[in-house]
Every structure is written in structure tokens, then in C-alpha cells.
Image (cartoon, rainbow, N blue to C red; front, side, top):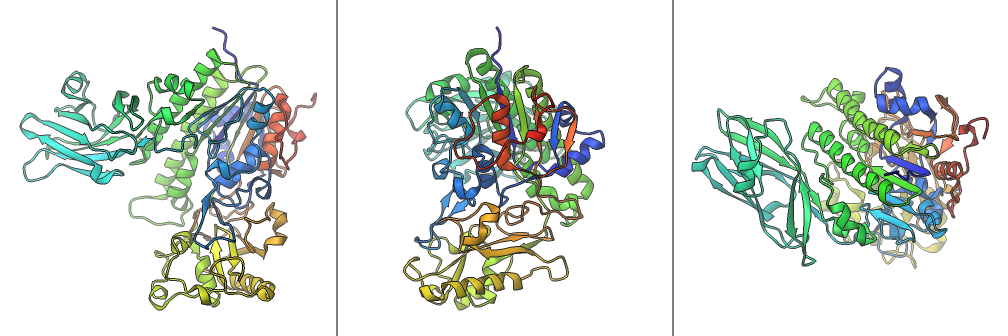
Length: 608
């Protein structure tokens, strides 16, 4: 059967770092990415959006617009007329106010497929098929978990690590070398208890949904995965749904008869596909749709399995549908940023994780994604396909945190009660958690300013906030006090200066910010040892932030197709808001309705 390949293909990978990718390719590594760079054009100085946090950045990529236009000015949004602790999520696409490029195309009759794309769901645009990525508004995930099983009488079997807590119990038949694990769920996703059976053998563990399937299973040896295990389970909607799992044998201690098995989570795709008619088709594809991070290997492997499921969806779509636009997303690379960037850069220390180990984790995960890039090149890119692989931001392994709420407290702008003030430690610092639920630890009648989002501070203004204490006539003076307080506070006085800028919200247009959701004061951190506690290795940092240890906030972007140059690295300024306009122009698609970015003509081959 002749496959209908898309005219426009975008693969977005969260957290990919430009300089790391370029450095590794120059060393002869990451062959998947290297191949695409050889066949396309690479932007080595791509600038992220500010703040450098995922929902803000991806909204700019998808809409071609700056945050003031699309409204995702941070991952958490705060309206100044509400209580300081009231927030809304920009991960929910109903809070995005600009059209994504596929919505603009869909309204013009162009068919689009969007797979697992951050913040892409909820909006029911015509001619657009959404899969996961926030489509459903109901819980749909059976969480991943790991269980430790022991055969000796004096060591009980137990769940070692799990995200469903007391909703799992274990029954053990020790005399038969059989363990039976029973799932007991609370009715949020499924309403049927179900079991897993483990038969311990000398060579491995046979795993199945019951005794019969376990006995028929091939033993899974230590550090290996089972095949996909599919089973129908009754859901809260009142009908059974097929869920797909894999299990990984993490420990098989025959001498002490102690065993550990890790299970992936599973997703109810009947709640995660729009239009829903497609859900029954995609549910049948025999591969997992969730990852697990118990170890770097289980995360890398399960990402590969999940990517395989995505390829099944894409193959089916090309064989059976007429999509001109396909958009796919992965959140993988940001995992290594948050978990290992400091170890790779030598700024975090652990007795078990060395710089060399961290570098291997990085390379492994980039290779997994490089494999996906190669699959797309081989199977989804046709003669007329314009293809882009991009990330949204990089990362910096910062050992210090810029604690905004303490900067304000030190200046007397935010006042804690006596007991809360004693708990001012790094471990107890969380802007949103401290402010959320009307935290009584803040004395609001004495507080003149409060932090919100990762880079904003608001005046606690009378007549606006319900907690307001600052008269209107003192607004400008309070803004000036806040800016001085932010500059004065420096968690790393021996290192580079932390603050890159701090300005009033009405002057934040140079970063594409402003409007009602923007703070009264906006600030950003320079490339240094100091990052934000909220967002950590990225978010507070300006898009051009980088450090000598290797951290860099700049994302990568590669274009490939008949319209683009080949084997070219463009070391010139570019912006996330330029990606969609450039890709749409190359593919002959309509421009995103609300775009503020432009077409990067320097990427095009001379004949175009």
C-alpha cells in the first residue's frame, strides 16, 4: 500500500541542549542526529523563550508567538486580582490564547496528527487528531511501580517503590515459589482489581496475568524486560479497555531468594484520543505508552518502547489517513538535565554518580532519541516532506538556588510569622507551595510584595489583591524596592553575579512579556552557579545563559527537506518563535494566525 507521507513533520524533544549535541556529533557520536545534520541545516545559536520553561517555550514554538501573545508566561499562571496563592496551569491548553500552527491549518481544511504534544490537548480544532498530550480531562494512567519479593519466612514481601501506595497489596504462596501481587485501585481509572503472578525459577522469573499465562511465559532474566503483556481491565467508564505493560527484572538473588521487578505504567487511551473513534485503533497497538525511571536503563529502554508505539501510530496514519501535518513530542532529554546535568558539569557531588557515569547517561538517552530521528527520516520523510527536529531549552547544572521569597523577606517586603521565619532553609523553600492554599505563614497585612511564577514578583496592592496592603500611590516606589531587593540578594557571592536583569513588568517587552499575567516586576538569572529552586536547571535563566562547565540554555534546531540547505551550520541568531513560520512556509502551509516570529530565509537552499 502506498503511504501518504506528511508535507510537514515536526519532532519536538524537551530539554535538548544545542552545544552538547554539536560537541558530541563533532566527536563522531550520536549518529542519528549526525545524519540529519548532514542532510539539513543546524541553528547553533537558537534562543529559547523567557522564562526558559517547557510550557512557555513549547507554546512559542507551536504558535510562533511571544509569551505576551500566547499567555503561557510561566508554567503556573496567576491573575493579580486573585489571592496570591491561586494559580492556573499553562500545561492546560485552554489557558493558551494563540492558535497553534496546526489549528490554523486545520481551520483551512488541512488534516493534522498531533502525538503526545505538551499542552496541545483540549482544543478541539477541525481536521486535527490529538493523541495524549493533555487531551483527556480525566485520570487515565495506571502508575508504574516496583515490587520487592522475598522467599524466606523471615523477610516479608513488599512494595518497595510505588506511586499508588496502599492501593496495592501482595499475597504470597511461598511453598510453590509463586508470588501473587494484587492491584487494588480506588476507582479513579479502573474499577477492577487484577493480579500479576510471578513464578520464580533458577534462570529467571516467569510473569503473567494469572497462573496459566505465567506458566506459559519464558523466564525473564535479571536486567531484562518481558515482552508486552496486554490485558483488558474494567474502567470507571463502565467498559473494559486494553492496557499494555512491560516488566523489568531488576534483581534476582538466588542465594538469598530476594527478587525485584519493575512495572511500567499504562494508559487508558480511550480517554486520551480525539476524535475518540481513533482510540480503539491505537489501543490495539502492542507496545507501552508510558515510561519508568527506576534506573537510567529502564528509562532509556522504556522510552525506546514508547517511541516504537509512536512509530506504529505514524505508520498506521500514513497507510490509512491523509495527514499533511504530523507533530510528535518527547519529554525525554529534560530528564537527564534535571537528574544528571550537575554531575556531568562537575557542580553536583554524589558518592555513587561520577562525571563519567552522568556523561554516559546523557549519551545513551540522546542516542535513543537519535534512533527515533533516524526512523522518521527513513519512514516518514518523503520527497516533499519538510522536517524539523527541535528542542525548547537546554539546562545548567546549578548547585545554588535563587530563593526569591527570601530575597523579599530579607528586604522586609515579605513578612513571615515567627515560627515560619525559623524554617527559612533551602530544603523548605518552594514559592508556590509556600504561597498556595492561603499559607498562614505569611503575614499579608505586613507584606508588600510576593513572588509568583518562576521570574515574577507582584506588589500586594490594595484594591487589586484580596490581601492588598500597599496603597496605589506607593506602587511605583514598591516596584523600585523590589528591584533593589532582587539585585542585593545573591546566594553565591563568590561566583558570577546572579541577576541578569530586573525590570518593571511594563518594560518587559524586550523579552516578549507583558500584560495582565506578567508580574509587576520581571527578573532573570545570568549563566552562573545559581538557578531557580522552581525550575532548577532551567526556568529563571535567560535564554542566552551558559557556563564554562558546559551548561547552556540554548536549544537545538535542525531543518531538513527539499527546501533547506544541506550539511550547513548557521551560527546566527534565531528564536523559537521563528520555527513554525519557517517550517510552514517551507511546506506551503498557512502561517500561524498569531505569530510574531518570522521566516528564517537563511536556512533555505539558494534556489528557493
